[in-house]
Length: 314
Ligand code: CP
Image (tube, rainbow, N blue to C red; front, side, top):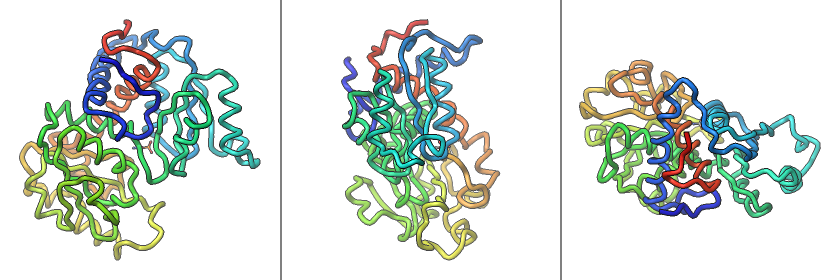
């Protein structure tokens, strides 16, 4: 099957077959990552720019490791060290980088829409590494990969997403990705953190009562309370939020015996998750998500740059 995408900006442009091709390709890259020499010549001769204009630990480091393991040349760029601080526009910056005949830009920016603007400016492949409150498609792919590894399939899996849905770019990609793959999605949040129109996200149900739905869930996806994006005070205190929506040892008896816990990171320990749940070896798959980030990012870069799903060279 052909992979006919130029960019990874909006997960809703991808079909379930496209997503499965990325997940299966990621699975093949797992063997590369588990041997002593974790490197293949697959993208030798390609140049990729990592333009991170906003802080990142997981996304940035896993893209950089993925690029090294695929043997491509990279440039790390952005933030306060670029000429944007001297007033250079995004379009001028991008045209400058594209003059170097680079092949792909990975971009994180606080403004929604920047990845699309780059794709419209230059004939170059673009991966959105998180734009404002809009999307974070490689996060959704690594979440799907982790769920697939632990649950074996997506059809009719009950996934609950808990927390700051309104401000979450993770949700902007994860909710449509879960629906594309056939999951049942429940959004759980106080009204002040629920999007204005959850119905248009295509979710199956919304509720403010975590304890009522927790017993149904196969996957409990906890979101970070994004203190940096909370313009108004959406709940009285972090302590009250944690009492009503925190996943903690006291709530574990409400969960299915085989329910797993996901979180995109970084975690606010003691707010959305206590350490007992965050580090729970039977339930928490958070570090598996981090590892999956390398695999799906290798797969996405490989397929976007013309790789075929059975052509990974050793
Ligand atoms: N999940 C995520 O995007 O984490 P970083 O901000 O550390 O990249």
